[in-house]
Length: 467
Image 1: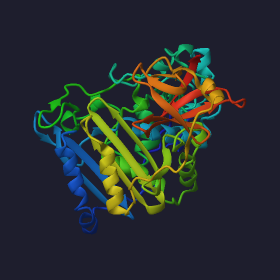
Image 2: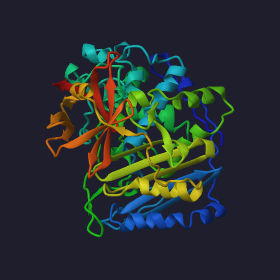
Image 3: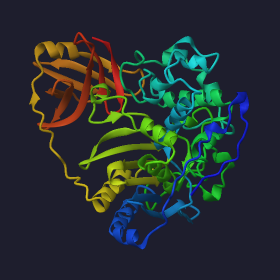
Image 4: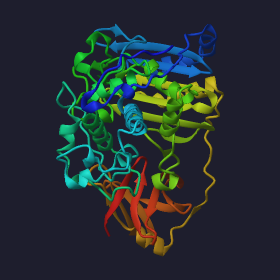
């Protein structure tokens, strides 16, 4: 399907080169696919029966065929059923939209990803202004992870938000370590707003959603039809309570406030999988799929690029992201080598969306999701290593991790909780031991002299703040 977009003369002399024409052929549902997924649907129904969410929407694309299905309710109290056109909040899974837009502007010669963002936004705090867009969209800025799911509505205010940030928002040095932060993407959204002269929603419509035929996707809940929106829910089935407000913050939409469908989110993933006739599209696709932070930089089993996690999942090479906010859960996973992708959106915080993805991987591409033991030997922490680890690690918000010596053993406690023995797993990881078994793993990030600077847990880095 050839997408058509009227040429528009844009502010500041920018032309419709923003809206590169993309060709994206989305297949129609096939009886063959419906047969393949007959067993998969049982997992969807199981997830709903577990009481985690009243409604769920799934899209799967595999080898040029598509499966879209919705179950349950978009509004449990009013008994409004969800359908494939119902809009769900996709939370942080939308960060890749922002990365795509920034990289597209870069390839068009409008944005230098490695220039200070003060080049594009005036009136910023001097330290904030020194950040680069690349640091923002790769989570290497050193900013704390602070965000608010609720705030003003109406037109986006990303630039206004950016000007409120000061040097107190940093937990560490920029460009050194990976640490996930919603503030990164809100700042990237401000760059896009300032550079294009559009409000954030309009910019994303022109740069991303219209070219990729994602016609329903929007950041503006206030202009969406409430009857077509899945409301978030608290509680568990059958005693769900429909939330009366939808998470929205005009100052923080870029970090994950889009309304979309599982099908449209999957259109984006499909665009990342296919070879395009237009060389610009192929160059853009390849740039979005690049890895920026390797495992040493993330301290984890995964790597990170531009709005995408990269790792092995069920013995496949996958890209993925997940997200959540009050009343919603979302996740996607794509295996480009097998032309497979799955997206899951739900309107309840209690659902495990990865159970659905795992079942889809096992059912459709026969992925082996059995647990694989980590064969890296656990070893004792030496006195020298332990003394270097001793200290408190925190960003000033979130978890507070303490490593200390208890009798003759190096131990860790989190937020004042119980202490657990520590062991080494390889050179750059430590792991807590619970009931004589490995439990939680932490990356250890050191400088070139072997001094411990950060402990990394899951997607965040925690600086060592004292001895």
